[in-house]
Length: 333
Image (cartoon, rainbow, N blue to C red; front, side, top):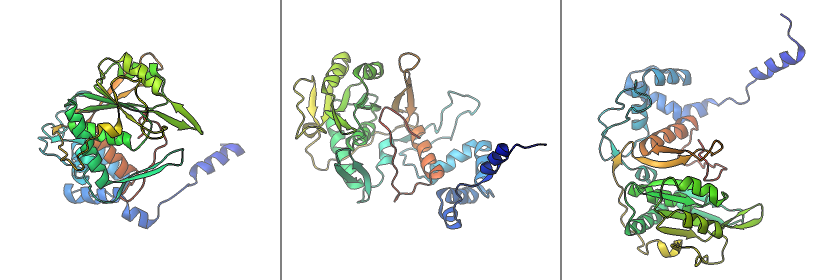
């Protein structure tokens, strides 16, 4: 066989390792802890990633049960079984009988460790601890309940990645409401095409955003969205580009974040206990082949799968910092 010079070079490059974890890294990796957990709890003798993968696809119920236990999912009612029938796809039920709340699992820590670090293009720097986050979510959830938000209502956001964005999502999902989001960079027609399909009750938004040292005021866009979607009963606007509270006098049904959030400093945060497959997110396709399609994600499914990806695949530990460079119009995993 004759191998040309450039083909031989490609073969050599393909075989060269770009990075290899140290023995200490391997020893302390979350996936190593998980393998040790599986070996002990399920009587296995897994020796690495390939063994784990083989076991996970051959013993699917055992794998997901192990994940549930390993990440210590909070549930008020245990599941009756891991999965009803693996031969039914799509359509089978996972963890039937379980009752849990997505936000409760996200807010399991209430200490002084940082939950969010925000660095805006304007050089604004903010941070929030888990203790602070729990209090703000509780205050916001109380206000949402007082405004009639209940299980199954849709709450949406037309907003950049501010700290208020995931805070509002957690408040909504603590009640059992369903969350959907669009980035502030989308034009009104794109937002209406998406949110108009799911009839949201509440809209979280922002006066504008910064991009490449330019200010983009989106209040006229918000007005167009609100006027086009009659189901929206309340609009909560975060002041980002304004000095002080944003002027929202021209936008119907709108109130500033500071005026909406409960003045109660530390209200009780009640988490609605819901089935594993209760909807938590509505995501949208890109819209390149017609109107964007709605894709409903279950609370339990998002919770356990993201924990699996972040802990096992990403080796994320609690004292690590993770950053995604993306807008809320997209899902990153």
